[in-house]
Amino acid sequence: MFDTFKNRLEITGVLTTITALRISAGRSTEPIGSDLPVMKDALGKPLIPGSSFKGAMRSRLESFLRGIVGNDRKLVANPAVEAEWSITSKEMNKLKDSCDNDESLTREILNHTDLVSHLFGSPWIASKFQVRDLTVLPETWFGQYQERDGVAIDRDTETAADGKLYDFQVVPAGTQFEFKAVVENATEWELGLLMIGLHQFETEQIPLGGGRSRGLGVVKLNINKMRWLDVNNNPEKLLTYLQELVTSNPGEDIPSYENAQQFKQGWSQALINHLRNNINQSYTAEVTPNS
Image (cartoon, rainbow, N blue to C red):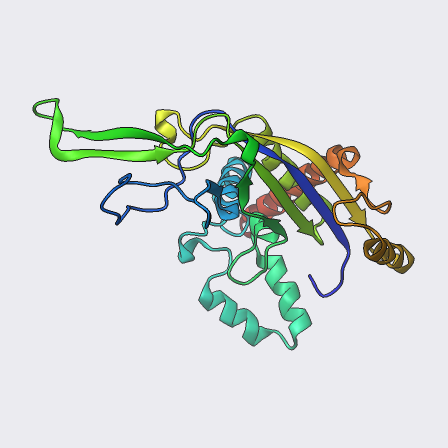
């Protein structure tokens, strides 16, 4: 999957907090300060872990796919429960015993891997989608966090429960974070899956962090660039790309890159076709034993 370089998609943009954002760093042990601080970098600035962004997108895509293909774990797995993985540990051992070499084992693993894990990774397959930690844009953050109060309500008295008052930090609305992601060696249908996930963030459909039922965590992604390079089966194009890399300055546009916006519709259609094929195969497998 990664032993031969085939293609690369680089995505850059800005993620803006539409409402206040709270990604918890856990309960504070400091004698003074917020009971529940937010995630910060080493300099005390707000930070959105790339894993938080990626996890929220993965969860949304899995929910979409379950609505299409049902709860078949071979197509849509549950990463939190091993019994609901597309390949459990016992099944992995059986695959290893049945395969003669690494190449055939890799092929069998890919054949048995659920759809989302092809792009996002799993315990047995590396992720093709990498998201950097999102760092704050200094000009949009003024060095301050908002402090909010929380309280548990006593159901009998309908007043604040004794000893249950706490405070928590949030990152203010309007704060912007730098977004950078890379996808390598993805197929067209996997890229189509990614386009749907990104669109959900572009249209404020995927909240981040905690307190979402209170209105926290609404964010909007604005993509500035999507640079695409496809060198599959074209050694000369890869040589040209490598030459451009060593002669260009960091951040410069490289001529070999194409604007990926022109491919979005084709990638999305490839995903639809792939899903239809999986639905048909699943239906055929269900009816064949009774035919």
